[in-house]
Amino acid sequence: MALSGYRLIVTGGATGTETGAKAEAGNGAGILATALFNLDTDPLELADLSSDEPARVDALMLRLDDWTSTVRNTAITAEESDVNQDTLEQLKGLGYIQ
Image (cartoon, rainbow, N blue to C red; front, top):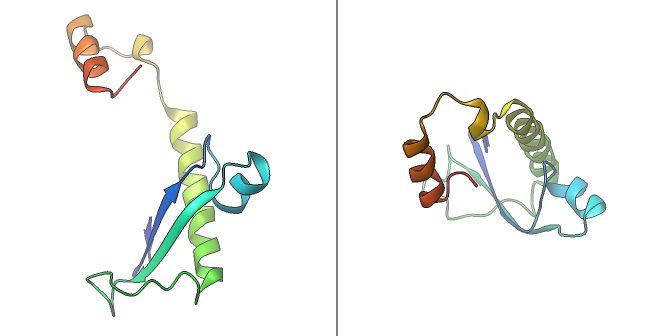
């Protein structure tokens, strides 16, 4: 997730549509790691600012939550698509759909 020259990288065990504090409170899986980088001053992403800027991390996590919810709520199933059976089988074989 990138916003205003910053990039937030999230790795971990959050499930469903919630990340960050919502995931920690809601499902116990939590986030294993977050990293925040200022791309204007650190284009190589060498200096993790997540512990120095927790408010910015929280703001980006909220945006990520919103985006994830939107994607999940607007996604269609394979059965709802106009994709032919051969293509569906190829996508399943590649792991894109279940």
